[in-house]
Length: 339
Image (cartoon, rainbow, N blue to C red; front, side, top):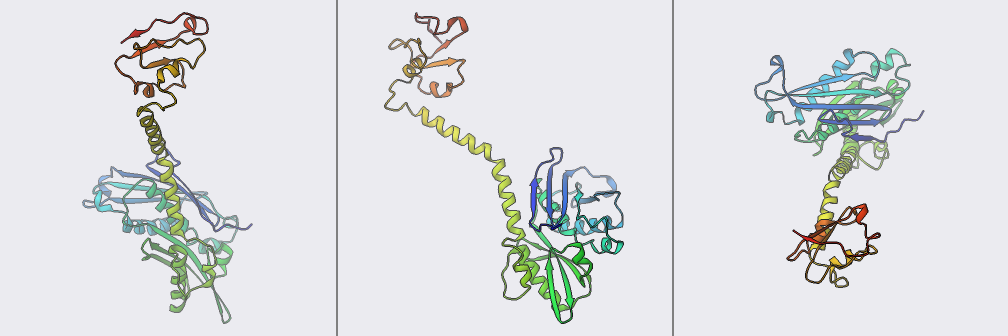
């Protein structure tokens, strides 16, 4: 089965959490939920900053040393980007539930499972970042991360971005690098054997994958991996969320603009709006001259009272129709009451 390296994300879909996100890439799917700042227990309280708690739940079974190791990495990373000084004596609790893994992770040997600790780390970091953004928790910067594998064969060297578990198993070293939105290196986790020259090429290629920084040097495989970078994906995801959140505001602004345009005055083709409303329905009599300037029809949903009230002059009248007073059944004028 071919795994897609293209990332996908869903934001703010858990309504009982302050922020939530689901991120999928390279066969891994992680759901994140964050609550905070909330009250913290006395033993975990920090006098001058907020405490960050990260809980990772595996796709099957209970968490072990692998999850505790990943929790410590994510916690130390988040403390560098969250403005914890703004919330002293509070707690920011982040829960990451792994819901999808590559098919061969649970069927492979123990060596494959042990070597795949870093494979899921980029998905966990991206989910944490999007979850914090969904909760509107103040951040000093955003983070994007990527996993790469180094494979040495004879005199050739190949650096593979977004490696699968089988590629990780035969790789000489595996690396996970995370960068800030400004391009600074924030996290670097490595396993295996590699040289300083290998590290320099890995750093350049990973930065290009995360931040889109072009360079003549570096790995060519990473440049051909995809047209977009992770920072661009995060930006487009947040822009889509903001547009959806503000759609009601734009709709309301359009309604107010149409309302103001209607209140400015009736068009020249309809000099008397009250007469046009009165003549819309068959049998509806016209108001007598000088008696009524605005007619509000109660019961017809296609009429907007605010628009009609905008043309009110000296007298305001209401005409209420019931089934027994329908203009289709009555031919004589209806009584008009002035308020």
